[in-house]
Length: 381
Image 1 (tube, helix red, strand yellow):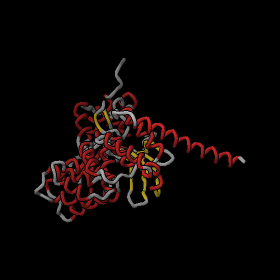
Image 2 (cartoon, rainbow, N blue to C red):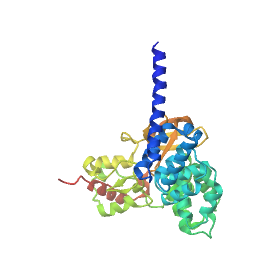
Image 3 (tube, rainbow, N blue to C red):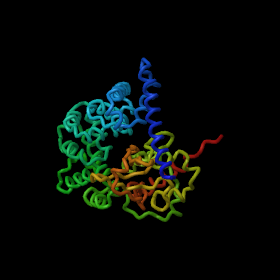
Image 4 (cartoon, rainbow, N blue to C red):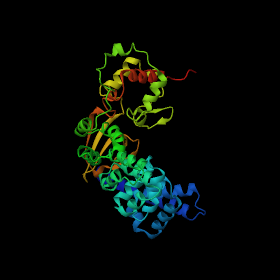
């Protein structure tokens, strides 16, 4: 008896949602012009009805087409294309991708182009004035299928060196790409003007074997870690320079700014450090740098996700629903994955913050960095 009532309630709820979606859609469609509020109403109604019903109904499909046209160039457009499996909007997606190459909307747009396997469009973009941004956004997708597109840029000496450096940074975000860069280094085929960039990037990758090989074939500059560090008690007695520490914080080889924000500057991946000096003493700051795995902040645990298609994702889980999870990569890009596409996910015991950062600076620079972090305090009222 209870089960029958529950089934009837569920069926009634579905009918009500469908009816409500249709009402909202009709009221929005017949009102002209399509102002932003009305577009939002259409999108809400279409989303409630779902792809199956919308794609099966010519009137609803017409409403979807209007919403697509009205939202071009916006994150809403990307969400609509993704949600309803639209395949004929690749050029418009590419425009968003190159304009937002380091933002979630742009990366998701690039992912959709990759899913549609529009390789010619991407190849053409890599030959255009948008080559730099295209290279950046492809790396930010973390998709191994882009590696064959980016590999040739590294060794093409006719291309701009800035573009080739970006190709190195992008490839280093993908395991297969990082492995290919190391192979070039081992075979002494990595161009000299890219070695510093490759050294910086590959010594910070998250794959232990590749990182170890990078230390062997592309070691960090000599002298930075030639002497063993003194105990923390002695480090705390050193006089640091906050101004110089600020420079160390932003330096590529150390790359704190690539995962943390300070007063709005930087990438929002790890904890915001704008007031870290108020929260932690110098001893705790040293410990956080020298042993990042000792105390991982709640909500900043790294996750490894394996997808059924063989791809993988790594980062922080920032939100989760019954159907999908949203993950933030080390680039700050948030990507949504359907749970039906996930084969396995596992919380990592290691911090998303890489260990061994002290190897990229002298002992004095480490003291300067801690002095700078200690100076970042909450403003007095």
